[in-house]
Image 1 (cartoon, rainbow, N blue to C red):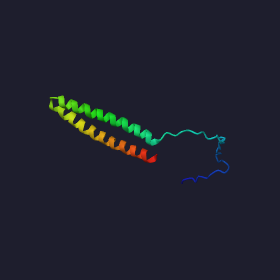
Image 2: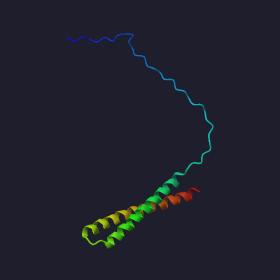
Image 3: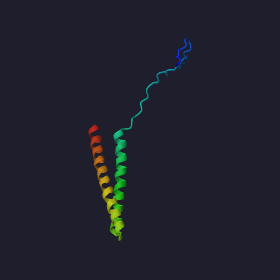
Image 4: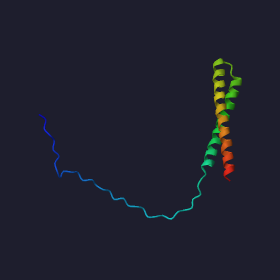
Length: 103
């Protein structure tokens, strides 16, 4: 026969309460916030330049390549980098329009 477990009284574990000190209020400083649109615009322009350069290099290498495997490689690379550069161009134009509208 199984024995029944009986809870003992008075054996509860005590929980330790941590005392949290609240910081005193600090006077607000005037900090000029950086516009998130400006940061995103800079990033999109950098990526646009990078993928446009990659597109141009792959097109030049495609023009001078002779073997079929290099022709296939550079054509696929130029197509992909061209579409990505086009996407970054659209994003850059959108951020420029948003920047003009917010002024």
